Image 1 (cartoon, rainbow over the protein chains, first blue to last red):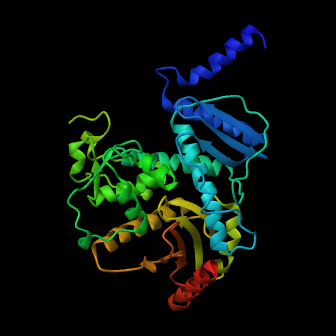
Image 2 (cartoon, rainbow over the protein chains, first blue to last red):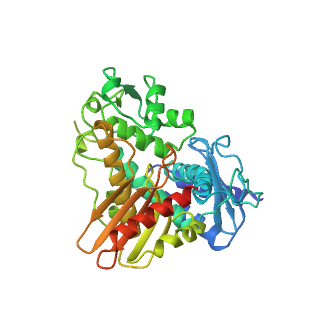
Length: 263
Length: 124
């Protein structure tokens, strides 16, 4: 490789993280790269490095698997490679055990502005019951999740330090098994991402579940006294996350608590 | 829709009289897993997101009241009937089935029974 081409390559890689570039540009750039790989029906891997290292694996232009250093991988103990004649629901649950970490990792890679490197052919890992996903479906799901996280960001993010409410009376609360598993693992300063790793669950799903516990005032943000009160008028709404997609503007009623907002 | 191959699994539900749309949704994340629809004028993402929101609100209610084990929810609009049923009683993952039916054609009792038996066979 010549000196010029190395310089050009370095410029291409760093151009995605230069200060002042709008994050949307980066997302479009990555999405464009992914769409080219999908359109070419390529098989191989697209590595990412930077704030979040990771890989997206393709087979015949469809996404088979993705992993990120900041999101847990599939819990292979919970779903060992099953037989093909499983009941439909168990089969879907087993596939979901692979798809969910894949969506979670892709969300992280596309949101963390990691730099992507050269796509190269490789063997595709099969961590469980394999099922591929169309790129457009994956990107649509990632965009929806980004809008949900945007709603939640006025209260918490995946990296918000949490504190448990010291005044919980067990007789008066009813929580799901998952919520209980989260509550007993929260130590002062734990973040939703820490809890996701503890439970081998997706960071997105854990953040949403932690938000539900914050709404019920069983948890609060450790560092922000404002968040020890009610989480405000902005509630997590999956409907609002998809209606924004159609061109609406997301309504933020407690902008003062939003990152960068005024108190 | 994430799981293309799961679409065929919803065939039995599409045989219900008055069928308009069905989808499987992961309640905790709101992700649509599979879908089947006969009418293009219904937005699948919005309907699925609404089902997940309803399930979450009811989970909040169940946390405050002495009720146990959500089975299904029926929402009646003038022209449509929405049936939301928890397919899987296990804690994780919580998968919802949303079925939208044409109210002028559906037999509610029969539809509910067919949805219930579908969910039972789905999990068996």
